[in-house]
Length: 315
Image 1 (tube, rainbow, N blue to C red):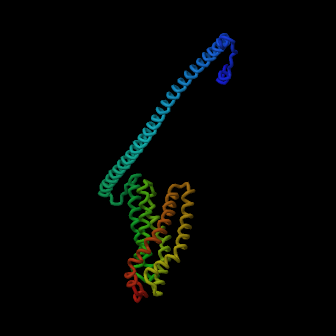
Image 2 (cartoon, helix red, strand yellow):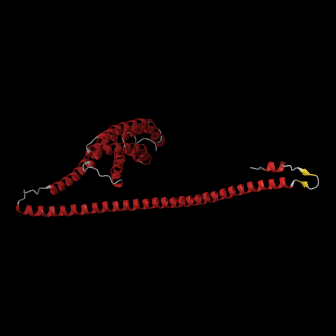
């Protein structure tokens, strides 16, 4: 193959009269023609291959774009289907709950009517069966919850009234803990979690009895600080500062014990109750170290007037 350098350095033999040798020039031109034709053919083939590659690249880019659009559409469709399915499932669940509640109400009405009819013939007769038993169980549980809750609050109120020598402080402490209990019992409603029918009785008493000491710890230190002549802000601040570590440790111990049982128990009722108690411990700790100090600050004047030994304390 003739290179550009060969052409540049090519020298022809000169003749005396007519210049360069015609034959030598013709031979070189023929050789150039052959090489040029060969190069031109190769160039044409390369251009053809480049065109084919460009066409293939365009084709693949088109496929890529189509695939991306398809994937986006599929993802969007999947999300829409998932959302619609979830809405449909929620609707079915709500309809099932509503239907079940209606059936339960109808059954209870029928049981009540049957009871009335039976009592007309025999005042000592009892209506038995799964439906009447469940109805009695629910009614007894509701009655027991109200009774147990009232009695437990009353007993704790009386005990704290004598221990703290105050009328207002027991009210504030019970309100704070009951507020934590209401939060704990309200969470399952918003999370659509089913809890045992005895949960209200168990949690209402255990959480109240197990966490009221957190409030008593802060309150006793607050009373002592106020009696020592400190203003209400300083008294509450120091009471919280000296008690918070003990409250948190105690709450975490209660949480760890109940959470461990709830996590490993294979009995659904025990697991559910322990989960409620462990969560209640954390909620009570948060309420005691946030809400109760605010109560003491707001009702400080009332506390001083209704607590023995604090009436002379300056506000």
